[in-house]
Amino acid sequence: MQLSTKQQLFLDMALEGKNIFLKGKAGTGKSTITKIAIKALEEAGRKVVAIAPTGVAANNIGGQTIHSMFRLNPYGVLDFESCNEVSGEKKRLLKNIDTIFIDEVSMLRPDILDGINWTLLKNGCKGLEHYQVIFVGDMKQLPPIINDNTRAVLYQNYEGDRVFDAQIYPLLNVTVVELDEILRQSDTDFIDALNLCREGLKAPYFRQFLGSAPNGGIVLAPHNATVAAYNKAGLAAINSELIEFEAKIQGNLKADDFNLESHIQVKHGAKIMYLVNSKTAPLVNGTLGEFIVKDKKYFIRAEGIDYALEPVFFTKKEYVFSREENRLKLQEVGSIEQMPFKLAYALSIHKSQGLTFDEVTIDLRKPCFQEGQLYVALSRVRTPEGLRILA
Image 1 (tube, rainbow, N blue to C red):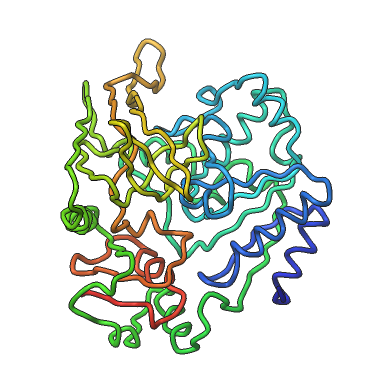
Image 2 (cartoon, rainbow, N blue to C red):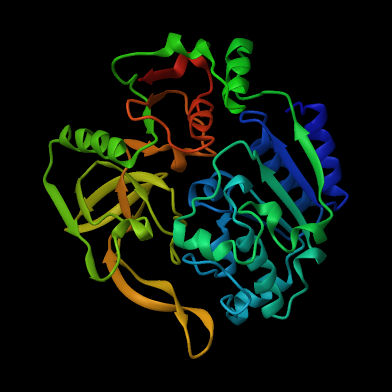
């Protein structure tokens, strides 16, 4: 394929071994050139890993989630003590890495980047500043999801909540390359309107896509309740036996603390999304597939292959203040066991970042509530012909 001038510049710099932040608006070809660069570096003999904050983003670049790769605790703010020593095989892997690609960095908290560095150091590896690190993302898209408890702890050690606030970031000597040619969309009016939205401005252009019903493609919505309503309707349209899974919860927690469903209703043939990173199959948080029942056993069919579905078990920990030790510490407060999937006729906008669709309906009858949400949703569609908005 023919690369843009900035894409070629990025590729050349990557092959020179430089640390880079590849930025650009949605649709400028960040994921495409990232995949090309990964392949080129591998062909040049470098050992490359590609990671991202979410399973959807990791799957989009053919990589792994950050938490899975570095065995990071997914709950609470990280510090050196909370980072883990890993198994001998994983330790050998870490010691052999040359280049680390990190995608969708707008969603990356600073302690997660520091956690990568601390994990490397804790396992006898060089610090992150001795690796080639390539960041990819658009800081105008969705920021990290941070609850009040996490924010209170995070701001004890950090000036902000973005990746640039990490302690290790200034040591990486990152060069910025900004892609400025829109490739996903070719309609100039559409692109200009997207750019207005990206800057938080009004774009009357989008009024022409208002409708009263979905267009047949995937539905994106800012609120989980809206997503749930669409998924319920999609399930009702299937003429097969209803199967239910109830979460086993103990203690003080909610299923959505772990991105799980407290109650699942599903049928053979339903569209579903896998919600964790499997240790035994090529399934990550965000893998889309079909729910399959065979001989009273349950599977997710992804890319034509059936993978067994088994319950997962998690414990929840929260920060408490220990007067005896005069520090914050984590204490277990509950546990959950549940099947790791949910219906996927509709997705939350957060789950869609990094993906591209031919047809998208954006349901805004309950409006967006976070910076970058509307821009992310609007920029998921390849052409304006595939867009519909309910408002």
